[in-house]
Image (cartoon, rainbow, N blue to C red; front, side):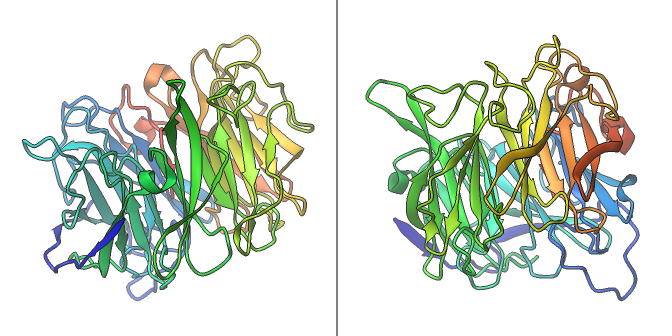
Length: 480
């Protein structure tokens, strides 16, 4: 089921070049080593995808805007625009490559700077029927400045390689590995780190995850569930049934020195995060299923649902999973058909109490009578686990939030929690990809000891950071 292939020194094609002239932290400053800190200055940064943007005259070529963190939060004046038209990035802009719609981060070369990985899954390989490349944009003191396309060893059959991407230490050796999903068979690869900028990794393996788990692989999510030194991997996908429809499923693969191994099945869905919501030292799996409950969507619910499957020393806990909807006590609003509760998810400690909280996108929720204006909720972690108690919901009509709830904005289409200013509390970044009929925009929310607040919230779009304007879905994916 698995095969390992030694990588040769020439296994990767490296293209180096300066993307922009961001100031270095100092001539001799060591990088912070913080996850999500591309330039090593001690503040986390955020990558914002605009995957359908026109670049170089090519519709749907796509780009990524990187906004850098400071002691005051994200600084939109300190940014980069990265596309396949940027010096140092392999490839050229082509229509419908959707550069940026698959992103993850991690320090692949162990230099203390976080790197940005783009799964360019729609990129066609020459004149072949193969598609999908993995572009690693390396962090450094001046920001993201050089890039590498992984070229070998790759699956023999590539069909949208990079359809989903995740990083983690899957073998527990202390180095960051890269896992891309592939729609063709075998459908999962792991490039084991460190991956040097000259293209040398320790080894790579291919995993037939769909055969092991009995389902397709649509999305992968990394995190530590059982508390050991190895990162585990959640596989989310669908399974054919005898009735002719697809049933949504998820399966956990536990990491270890001998690789990833199937551990067990849990609630299905379309997005997920792994975080310790009850502070017991084990990662808990929160899956989001925005679909309505049916035989095919057993973990969904009216208006959508999130399900918490708790972690333990042995992996998945025997504790009964907990399902939360907008009808759960303490959650503002009501579960209504088509709301999309659970469309997007993010995890972070928003009030500094040590418990991970969960942001939940509700991108199709009506705000008053405004159809699919969208909102997001923040659910609180606690000693008893994730709860509706103390939950908050924000929309563009919430006091202090810039803008106005408008038809089909889809506010909450992506959410991201990260401690940008280093105060020990995660701030929230949210997007509305259909703001201004498809242009897209991003909102920044501060955090206090009471959690996320709309006080001082800001918003920006492509024009603010110098990106191509027009239909872009700016904010479709957020990473850092």
